[in-house]
Image 1 (cartoon, one colour):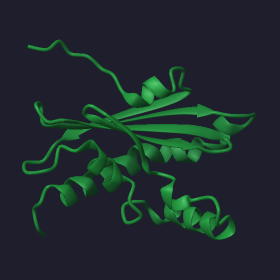
Image 2 (cartoon, helix red, strand yellow):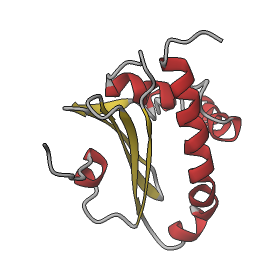
Image 3 (spheres, one colour):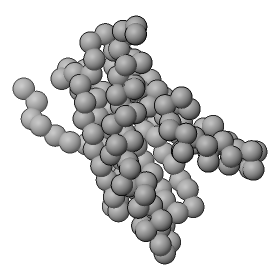
Image 4 (tube, helix red, strand yellow):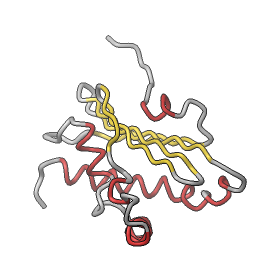
Length: 150
């Protein structure tokens, strides 16, 4: 039997985060165990709330060279975890999306590093809403990836 351990690409990439959160949910029966598929589903345009997707789309219009559609792309996959990396002006964000098929669990680990003065305060609304937001995104991904039709 394996000893309990916790590791994440998100925490490996930002070793000294200013803010972290972890969510664990049940991997639905018949759902894919591919962590990249889970990460892509979690951060698809359809999954993101309009108040997040809107500014991203606006940013793509204002800065056509900045590939806003790739902002939440999977950057790295290692073992049972995929890493989403976002480097913005005021915050670096890492999201590790892991799938433990043996224990039928999905985990999402976020790590943030704030940059500059006032970044912690400006990110407060996002940090406060992150728990509810991610819960909804995980629930939606569970429905989408379970293979169960509605």
